Picture 1: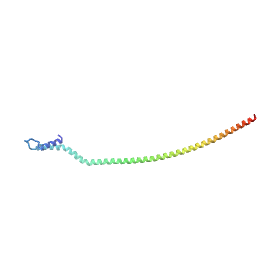
Picture 2: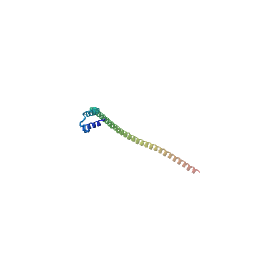
Picture 3: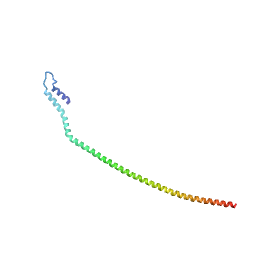
Length: 152
């Protein structure tokens, strides 16, 4: 029997669910039921007492675990803040590098344009000289033709 059934049997015995002839409570049966209830409750009471005694250790353990979790969370937060600081510094450094690259690119473009202008200027001078020489040759040929035509 479980404890609940034992308690119900004890109640029946004490309430007098006996016949008309036997009007007395059977004390021996009540003692036996109480003893049976005690024997069934002893392990539960022992485990409850151990839990009560171990409560301090359980609370200390829970407190230790909570402190460890809190410490880990604080460390992670500090690490994340550190990482975000690193990321911010990297972004700033990256922006500086990109700005410097743009400046160098602009300087290179200007230098290239100046170089091209110089080369094209020299080419123009050479072409002008060549054109002048062609004109001179043409005038020479023309004057030869004119002189030759007079002789004919």
